[in-house]
Image (tube, rainbow, N blue to C red; front, side, top):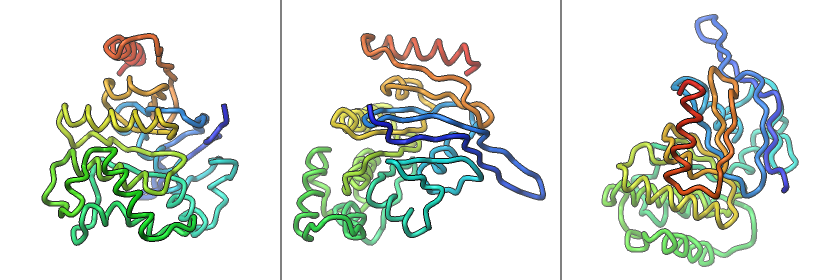
Length: 252
């Protein structure tokens, strides 16, 4: 399969109070088109930093991050911003949306900012409505963000992340602020997006959610300590049990 993302010898260092904190240490991995990869590890292991650095939201200290054949570490800021807007989607635990806009208008924001393609405003609106219908939130299109549930808001965030048809979806604890049943529903939507061809890289602390992914990378102190490949022949319960056993062997 085609390699969408190639990360080699990635390092991220912060300097605070004249002390050097090596958050990511020579990390290397690859993600193929259509893959779905979970990043797990103890608190403070560098999971979110890895996601933000690989996606170009945070600047690396050294190493290369080749996305779709281009090294984003060598891009100028405006070029990188265009790649993030047009080719990457983002979902966060905290559901950031503009309070003075409707749900539909929030979903449309990245589409209106993008210079990719020749779509009319009407075509973009229709695409946003189609995404909302797909995720069963059509009825909240004209609502304010304070008038919907957490699950509905996170589904709207998924719609917004997909509005520019990104090649990869980056998700940082996308179900972290939701209850169990709503988490399952939102995760099922992300799995469906992956089934339809969208590549996903996700940070999660939940083994049940990670077990839905095709691969799991386990981080400790900024380095990858292990990689788990999910057995598609197992039931979801068996996948969770198998992953939990693997995590326990690594000291989870």
